[in-house]
Image (cartoon, rainbow, N blue to C red; front, top):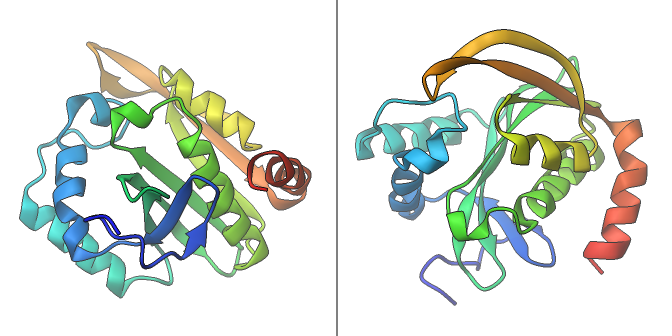
Length: 194
């Protein structure tokens, strides 16, 4: 077992495990959320302190009805990011996903896709949600492409919403419905998870 711990495995894939966040994960969260290469794709832009991350983790534990966030750990035990369901509406059966792959050596290698497919399986087939939303900064082509690979479709844009890299960028709204996702899941599971 590595220092990052894979003893707790909530959702298991072939290369990743999604498990609840622990206080011992805060140093990883702090490193990732203060890395300019990582945060250029997020809404956050201010430096985060340890107390900020501790409060965030504590608040998540108190608010499981609306937000579920998991640490992404490789099957070798390396913590590489987070993935979650936010603003869960049990009445409407919708939620919003958020993801962060903080370890840059793992970018573009399918770890985010596997993590997202595991999370969508949980959202649709365990929680019985019907629609999962997301948003992407227009210049984040890698995130846009992996969301499309997971079944998301563009629903609209908020024009020139975020200031990054010296200019304003669109926020792209995306979503996937359970009925559109299920055939993708069957194919993905057969090819990548068996």
